[in-house]
Structures are given as C-alpha cells and as structure tokens.
Amino acid sequence: MNKVWMCSGSTYTQVGSGYKVSESLPVGIYGISLTMTGYHLDKYADKFVFPYKMYGLQEDFIDHVIKTYSNTEGNLGIMFTGTKGTGKTVTAKELANKLNLPVIIVKDMGDHNQSMIEFLSGIEGDCVLFLDEFEKNFSESDSTILQIMDGVYNSKYRKVFLLTTNAMSINENMVGRPSRIRYVKKFENLDLKVVNEYLDDALEVPEARQDLLDFIDSLTISTIDILKTIVNEVNIHGIEGLRKAKSFFNVVTNEYEYSCIRGYAYTGEIEQDKNKFSIENFSKAVERFNNPIPKPIVNDEDNCTMEERKALNEYYEYRRHNFHNLSYYFIYSSTKFSNLKVGDGFYSDEIIAIDKKLNVIVTKNGNEINYYWIKDPNSKPSLYRTGRYDSLVL
Image 1 (cartoon, rainbow, N blue to C red):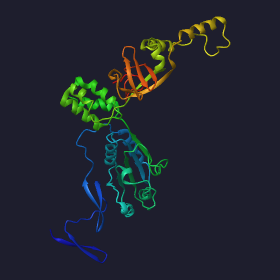
Image 2: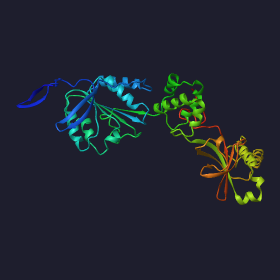
Image 3: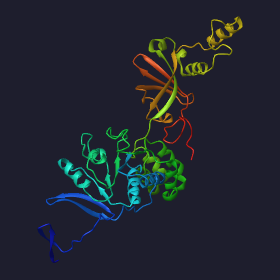
C-alpha cells in the first residue's frame, strides 16, 4: 500500500493511503482504545446483532425512551439494573440500535479516565455512551463519568448514557437525579409468559412441561440462561433425567416456608408419662387450639352473662392440654416435608419423630422437646404464585 502525506496546519505526517475523511462519526458500534498517538475509536459492527430470538425484550419501555429522546434536548441517562440473564443488556442493546446513533462502549481506563472523558466530550455529534456493568468499572468515588453527565464539558451535542449494573441497588450518585439518570429499569425474574413462550419454542419433551415449570418455580431466580440450560437438560435426558438432576443441578432453590403451630414439653415430664405427650395428643391439642372462642364472647370476659361464662369455662376445659405455649410459627426448611425423616435438622433442631399422616414433627433441643403441626405440608417455594400457598397458574 502506497503511503500519503496527511497535513494538519504546518505539520505533515506520512500515513497509509487507506485513510479517508468523514465529516461525522458514522452510525456503528465502537470500542475505545488508547495508544501512543492518543485515543481512537475502533468500529467493529454496524449495529448490535442477535443471532437468536430475543425473549423478555421490554419493547414498551424502549418505545417510551425513544419518544422521550425525540421530544427533549440535552443528555439522557438510562440505567438497567438486575441479575445477569434477566434481559437488561439485550434490552439496552436493542434500545441503542433503535436510537440509530454511534454507540461507544466505554470501559474503565484507571488513571486515564479523566482524559478519556475529555476525549468523549469533544466528539462532535450526538452519540450513545454504553457503560456495561457500570458498578464494576466505575467506583462511586470516581466522578469522571458524572462530569460528562452533568455537562461540565459544554457541548451542543447530545449524549445518551446507557448503564447496566448487576447490583439490585442503585449507585447513590444516581438516586433522585433524573438530570443524570432519567429512567431506572429493574429486571428481576423472567415473566411467566416468557417462560411459556420459550417452552413452546424449545421444549422437545412436552410431557415434562409441568415438572419443568414446577422446578423453575422453586428457584430463587429465573433467567433466560437458566431456563435454556434446564430445557436443554430435559431435551437430552427426558423427564426422569430432570427429576434426577434436581439434586445436583447448579441452581439455587428457595426454602420451603411452613406455617406451624408449635408447643413443647420437657424430657422429665415426658419420662413420667409418655402418653400425655404423644403425637396423637399433640394433634388433638392443635385441633382444639384452632377452634375459635364461642360467640358472643369475644372481647369482654368480665361482663358476660352466667350462661356465657359457663360456655366459656367449658371452652377452656375443652382446650386444656399438657403442652407448653402453643403458638403460631413460620419455619423455613431446605427440605420438602414429604422428604423429611428422623435425624434431619428442622429449625436448628434434630428430628426425633415424625408423623406424616398427622403432619407433626417432633424435635429435641437439650431437655426441651418441640412439637410442630404443619398447616400445609404440600406448600412449596414459588417465584410466580401470588399467595403463599396458591398453586402455580399457567
């Protein structure tokens, strides 16, 4: 390749003949780099390309931002926050495509951040500055990005800031500052409609659908990456393979939350009369404990009639039992009730007896024996149910 001379003022520099002049930065995706000759933008794509179907794309939000951009002036900031795989980066990239502006991927340059910001501020033309995983690349003490957001470097050209962060909390420098960050879009679990849409497209074992949905529903979080991997597991190994893999699959499941009635007794009391403190007697005590006080006696025991007093005394006699301090509890367990067994831990104690017909668990803690009646032993952790013990509605 022949070399040519490039002239700037009275200075001539010999460069390759492949150079051409552009009056403005063309639309495209650019990376920023620093060399001995200064900062450069390296174009590596015309736009973000997705070689796959996009699930969970926030199209309404994208349209909202585009309309705002078209009807405002000055800089505009948008932050996408949430766990990896929930769609925030894909949505940010699609928004960047629809803005139809040059997009510059901004990365941390350490001690050179200040000069980098000065370079970016000097770009003549509207553009998008894309800061992926913002919390990792720029600490809260680094004010360089804030300077360009706040317009410290005067420019007639607009900057759109697209920030993504995996932290569910927002950088305190961004909170309540819509002039910096106008919109904060949080991404959490995949919408159930998206889950079903992906299953319609990718699941090759339709009979495994409900098992797969139940498994997804039991996780601490659902992302498209997790969903794709689990569906792939089912497509390879079938429904039985999924059931086996649940015990060693690299995902985190929610704990089971049980509504209980708890009572206790002491080992000395039980040794004197084991029958008084049997599981059957505890179950009866719970049944009586659940019965309401007879009407019309509700709040005023002191001013009731003789008949009401008699009914109340009969009620108290009916509820009499040998267990101490029957009361309501919520207890979390990593194990499903039907899988619990003697020797397992439950509420930091060891299970010494269990009756799955009466839904009673007995544990020991020192010289105290605790009894738990489980209100709903079939309850399960859920991402998508609206109520604590509702079933998953598809």
